[in-house]
Image 1 (tube, rainbow, N blue to C red):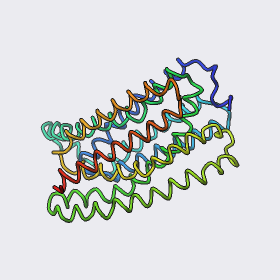
Image 2 (cartoon, helix red, strand yellow; image 1 turned 180 degrees about the horizontal axis):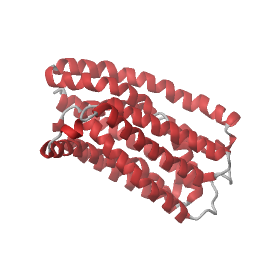
Image 3 (tube, one colour; image 1 turned 30 degrees about the vertical axis):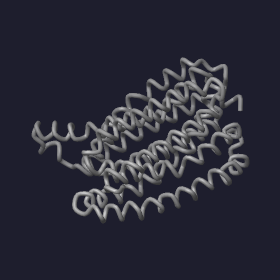
Image 4 (cartoon, one colour; image 1 turned 135 degrees about the vertical axis):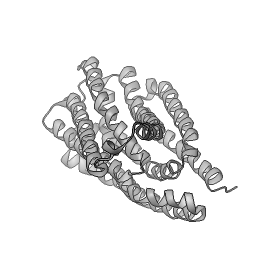
Length: 311
């Protein structure tokens, strides 16, 4: 464990590596926002799959080779670069010669339409990363490494709801524009489906994954407690992704969604500042769960009352 979560490693090294990851991450998110703005979520889902696969495989490989936390961070950077490259390649394949046919006004219109999605993506990025940043400054690299190792197993699941959503999004958009009753029916049918699928993964992470780690990846044993706590947020992660489809399907909800994202980010920061000093990475894990539950409940009430006009 000391090899992986080396408490003697300089924090500045991690900050430099994190800064290096920002550029490909921001560029990739710009392309991803462009796809979302054009309602091409399949390409976005493929990009996220590449990111999860490359980061996870690279992180596990670096740990097995003894590179420690720095190796994990380098794997994350490589994953972000692969994410960017895959989205660039997909833009050429899916959009073809679109840019050569666009007028300047058309290009600005596309950028304007994509901008809200880009802002939401950036807020989502801060929401996912801020706890690790605060943990590194308040507790140091050892605790950050423990939390980050556990969180990587959760991030590896992102592509599952994203892949399903890539097929659902066009149908939901059409239903919300033409038949609200059909959209409501789809949402009511899909929400328990997402819950059921997520519970399978949640139970697997809670009961099976710790045993697999003990047998095949003993280096991750100190992170098992984090993994068990984060397994409880998997259902909310899945259902929030479906709620996002409903809210992304109409521009009139984007401003409200932005403010809610800001609120959840601020709440996450405040709770982490309060509880990290005493509970460290365990507090971070519980705060992630609490924040996701609050986000789900807010979206649930809003969709019920404002989107589907239910009392």
